[in-house]
Image 1: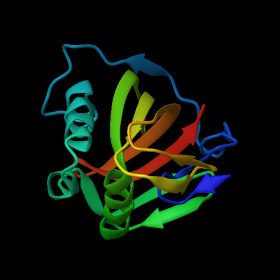
Image 2: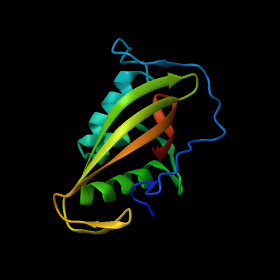
Image 3: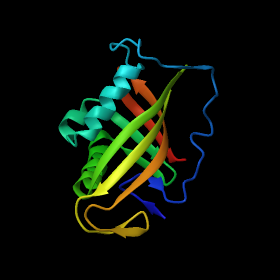
Length: 159
């Protein structure tokens, strides 16, 4: 079952962007320049901001025409993406940890551990109910494309 607010299916369809080429890649290391938008520092700052539950601060990372692609469809525009984020963070503490960041020729791929803790009673999220304090985790793979130093497209799938 898919929950639109999360952007991934519980069935965890494992294929991302089937039309993307498979260029050579390099693992981004701690010496990446922070002014390079495709650097490890950019994505670490993005996830730190995401984890603060501050949609206004998160807005700065998104291109106005951002698209969030998942197994169940596309969310278009920064306002729509932030509305999904607000919906998730109203119900859950959502903490994303980037486990591996790989820069490719035209996009960056990030393997993520996403930990959720229910803040309130949740009647249904990804096919089940949650009581306050209940936790679950997802292993995700995200592919990001940037324009002018902002996220233009994110393809996200559960692993």
